[in-house]
Image (tube, rainbow, N blue to C red):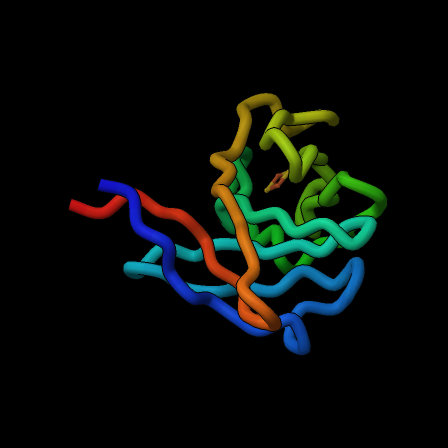
Length: 105
Ligand code: FES
């Protein structure tokens, strides 16, 4: 069953500055790109790296380890060596608060 979970407030999420949040022991990266909010798995699909430590340019997060790139809107891998997509999550706001929709048992 899917459930909306509060993860952060807008003050914590700066434009072009990803934020790591933990939901149900899963690391999720939050992004504010062109004033829209997005969420993906924090773990790069190529190897062990935290995408929230990477650079967000437009809608593309650049992995800090080997430079793989992903579109944060779709999770699609955009640049080698990343070839597999990452999972994305629906995001909504209520006032100043940010919520992610995740599957729960
Ligand atoms: S760990 Fe991200 S591109 Fe290699």
